[in-house]
Image 1 (cartoon, rainbow, N blue to C red):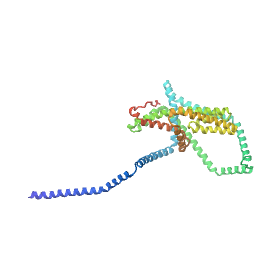
Image 2 (cartoon, one colour):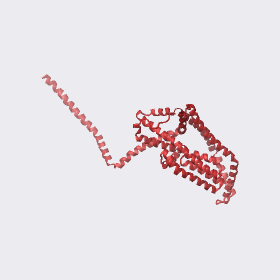
Image 3 (cartoon, rainbow, N blue to C red):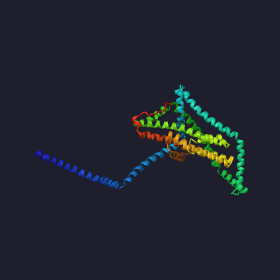
Image 4 (cartoon, rainbow, N blue to C red):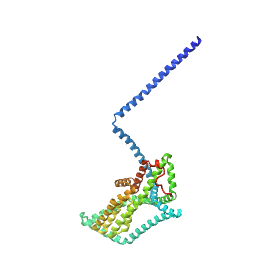
Length: 404
């Protein structure tokens, strides 16, 4: 009896436990009921949204994330532009000099001498061009001064006897107002001079950074790239390595082809200016050569300078002929060099080139316009390489970077 009396409370205990568990389950189910209702409402709402709107929403937030990441990246690059721009210049310069250095090494030159000779070649070429331009300007300074004075007198005569019919007092008044505004903005001029000094300091610093970066890339470019690849996760290293080396090969092709295009533009416009006896023909050719490294836009702007000089010093007839020469050279570049040479080497549509130059100039001015096309070309090749999946079958790129 005692045993049965002992069992009854225990059985009652178990009954109470089961009932409490049952009540607990009911309470948990009742607490989860609102969440289930929310999920059901969300599912019903998503079902009521058209599929096109769902796809647009999925694309929209991804595009916003990408745009935000690009904005942050551009902001960081802008803050460190004094370091980023010289580094990019060094990379482009190295893309031109590394094959030259490897050629010398393959033919038995010592490595240090194979590095020094390309650098000295660059300095000699730049110095020769600067000396040639300075000599041409100094030798023609007297004629330029005389012709400038004559052009100024002709401009004053046009103001007096042309459509404006201005008197001497009116011209003197306008000149006085301009001089007063110049004196009123003297503080701005002083600050501008100070900023000019700061800019000169930045330019010198940038030149040193370009020099040291180029030297180190020539010495150990492959080692620097391998270090960069090891920063990425191990599963992504093959894709990053192959894409980077494909981009490097494209950059080398772009630099070689761009030098050819710039040379053709400079020779064509400079020779036309020389035949037409336009002053400063050689400096104009040098300026066209340098400006042509900004595709499409650079050669047009520098060629327009040649037309303007011809208009000032040779008259409107010679200026029109010079404009015809400029248009002819641009037609040769646009219909022969760009499609056949540049298109084969870079594989970027001319419209993409124009848009890239315009966008780069808006974002970063002249440096942005200069780096826009090689950046787009390299990025295009890298994306195509990763999307092709060649790195899965061939972890080692087909055309590796030569040992620098």
